[in-house]
Length: 450
Image (cartoon, rainbow, N blue to C red):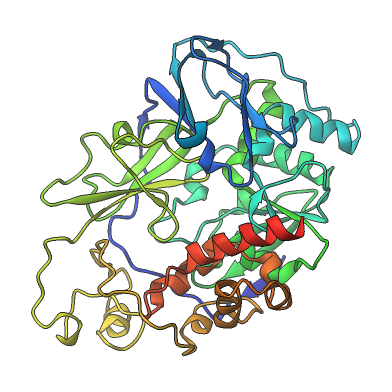
């Protein structure tokens, strides 16, 4: 097995990592399927209020590619088809019942051709969790990829340990990988700490990545193994979704439950919970939050997740729910100018490096403050120190701000996603909203070039 050692990156030491224990199953009575989670899809509704749906029934699909379906993960009744301004579809709310009946879905026959396997994967709704580079959107099923990337580990702050979360599902992962390998070459990437049972997979190219975050990001792995050039397409898929696909192949039943981590400094009992995409986040965290101050619940990890509102639904691309303090009542004498022992720093401003040398398990209670406002974007090399890709990040972001398509193409915009710049945003002394800039630029590129 080939091993790639990354020299750049940064592990953010946040307290409240999940213990290796599962506190049971929490699936809310109502499931919300949010259209904005599926970047790049123009939704067309397939149900109306009052309709009964089964597991696997399509609830909406992509207007441009009707074969790209988003299916119901539960049985129940469509309670609400929520729309916003200009009748934009916001979400579809399903009131679930206890039935486990499944819609009629085609079986995936490994001996059939590439097209038949892909059509069966799409019919079961798994096309909605496959993303593509370029543009980091839901994959266009009519454009075949040159390769498919599956990362078996997540290096983000407080990320779930897939070795624990997917314990006992190695056969399902293998079945899912084999199905994907019938479509294109599959790169299956692990960390040096991934259990041996999850490393030993057939029909794929296995590579180990060693280093700090963002080692687990698909974009970093693509850049090192199979870079995306103009006119090429690469697909990415989360290992939990691969396991669900494999379970469907092996059993013929669609089981869309997944094991997520509930973590953060403000979680009483950081642990794993079996739940389902679309579950109401407040029900997942109910009774497990320390409410001694204003808190922020994040739908995902602290770097790339979405701020959870009072009624938010779990994203299909979130492997964790993170709870931190807002920090709106924090008062600190002299601010950053005061030497402190309880502050994390990626530079030598505080004593982070010394503390880590003395105590390898040292963590910090982060809050949501950014400690400053946006200011002039000065190219200082900050981004480059935490960006382990063969790309010049500061120059690329400036080209994106200017909407310079030629420069974006030359500087590698085809193989990046907003999450690849999350660390850049974290270390940025100019407080630039880098991920938002990248997302808007990729949407602009797609609109102009497709």
